[in-house]
Length: 244
Image 1: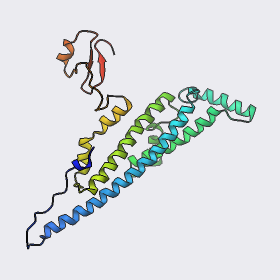
Image 2 (image 1 turned 30 degrees about the horizontal axis):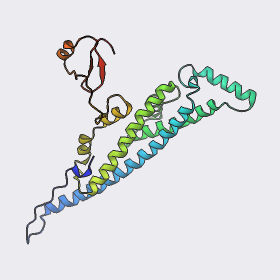
Image 3 (image 1 turned 120 degrees about the vertical axis):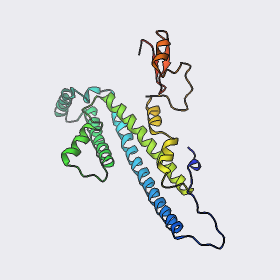
Image 4 (image 1 turned 90 degrees about the vertical axis):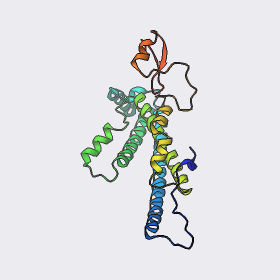
């Protein structure tokens, strides 16, 4: 989106031979302070997104290396681990899949810790609560490889949105955007849900070609469709009546 679309700060009216009122001066100083705070916030957010992006890229690389041995991750993987360790004991060299799994496991732990710290920034939690969120709220090698890949795609789209959001925010602030409303103005023009779900394929991107199938947003419209007809829901997701 164009940063120049974001509403600018409202300047005090120009009055010849009259200085600023105390209220105008206080407002101007407050807006300047708020702008600096928002610029730092955007810069920090962009840097954190870059760190997350690097971890996601590394995790995807290790996950792709495990594609030929999907039994190494997820339920029932303990047996595959045991066989790999026996091979290591017999040959003195660990199988590639065991090495790749170890790398993926450590990268996912780093990602999880970073996500938890970001989500709970400024809040006090116990070590038990931290570990619960780390293991249950983030991708880990106890999950099937397909699940890990889906979650990595989702997190990658979230991080890409964060980078774009903060870059736009910085540019808008440098061009005089109102620091009080800049976040909501960008969010209303570039919806996070639309962007992320479009990237991971949950719904078509906003700039995707329009489907020829009718959009159904009410029960009456659905009832009027013949069985087997294709249609899209309110979010643009395709369906078949009586099918999937």
